[in-house]
Length: 334
Ligand SMILES: [Zn+2]
Image 1 (cartoon, rainbow, N blue to C red):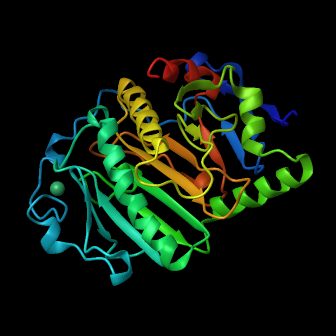
Image 2: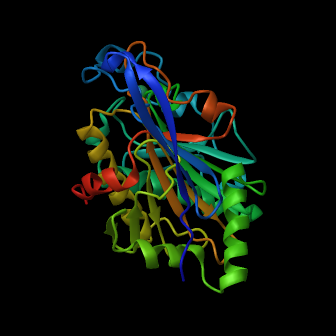
């Protein structure tokens, strides 16, 4: 079956000071996410790229008062409620505990490393494997206790990506509400399944793999630069996994591997900040786990956020490099 990929191009004209005030025409491409309809504008040179590779040593070198550093973490972080069965969960160097300021009914933090800071290209697959294992062990206990309809494992890295703590950590969130994006996606996935008898994601794979937006695969996970990226250098991992995987399932390493590869690509562009979310609708047979990873404004002194009025108020995604352009470059890291 085909999936409708809608894009239109508008033109803006101006007398440009960059060309002796001659008339110039600029193109703005507007795409729609084929599943949800969410619009993305591709606008030339919109990303607040730094002139030089950012230096962050002063900011990230200060470990004083870090609650997540070894020695402090067991003193300063909360312990799980009784149904989890352990005070904190540990795997390798990763350790997890409840979020002291929960976003929802079930909300935890997984500190990934003993190291207070590591640059974006120093993350190893095994680090994410341990961290996701901790998160899934917690989510498994939550599922036995409460069976929430939605779960996710999420990460902010560095302040320009929304993190107030340098020390690398992921956060889980599980409840029956889901987030706006999770609910919107599940509704559209249900509608697609009811209309076509196939899952949206198997159809996406059918048209995108192989193709100019296919970045690569890690085991059963296909990684794509989506047709309508939600943010700069967005890469999406599509899995076959329905419901919550067990902490030691192969999919955990496959997700960790792909994320590590994407971070390697971001580092090659001198990017240092990112977000990702692995979404698990837990009771939706047509909704496998999907991971979305995006680059954020490079963190440095006086960094400029990459979320403007368009994203903040209008709910509009804006990127400056089309997915067909960067997909090829990310593929070198797979
Ligand atoms: Zn620390």
